[in-house]
Amino acid sequence: MGKSTIAAALSLTLAARGEKVLALDADPDANLAAALGMPLELQKKILPISRQIELIEERTGVKLEEYGRVFKLNPEVGDVAERFAINWRGVDVLVLGAAQVGGGGCACPENSFIRALVTDLVLYKNETLVMDMEAGVEHLGRATSCGVDVMLVVVEPGQRSIDCAATVTRMAGEIGIKRLIYIGNKVTSTADADFVAAALGAPLSAVVPYSEAIRIADRHGLSAYDAAAAGTVLSGPIEAILGVISV
Image (cartoon, rainbow, N blue to C red; front, side, top):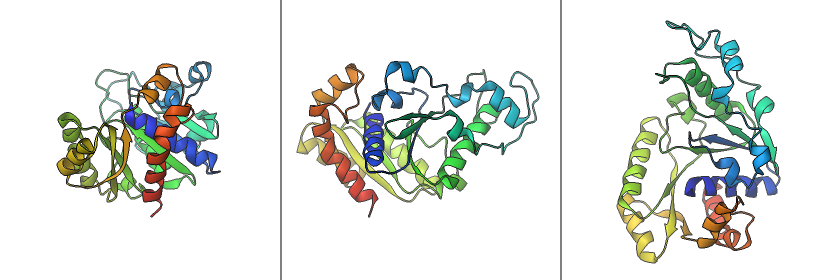
């Protein structure tokens, strides 16, 4: 919940300041729209890009159920965000989803289409892109990484989260993402924050304390950005993150 909560709060804050924002949910367990506080009836209108079968077939030049397929690795994707994003409070929301077919690994039309779309959004669109990713960099490649201004790594004070953050850091370095900042999440004490920073060998740019208010906001389908108590908890860390990013 932490990374989606932070991605949503950043998106809404930037949109409120007049920036053109695209929030891209690249986590197969998609919940960014909910974290933005988008009403359920509007969320139901979102069709993940990976399920746009006719579009993928048209642009890649192959039927998805065919075997021995030869398909375009650079399909046309420039109009996808404009056609399929759902706007909520000034934020355009687009959900990637995951390939649904058996054996749908990296070399399938769905994932090639998604990779081309991410590359287009990162490198060529003139707007602020906030991308909520799963714990990795699977949607990014070496060419795409040059368009990433900064990657936020959200880390909780536990060894599994630390190990995951270390893996993300290594993977990001391998594709050339040079600027990473670390956010402590669900931190209950100074000792928690010190533990995370020491384990990572890097300072924390912001710390989000454990908050019952954020948990309750999520339970009721509200954005933590909007819920009074939760928003108060988040406001300091979000300003800190934006301050570091803008440097």
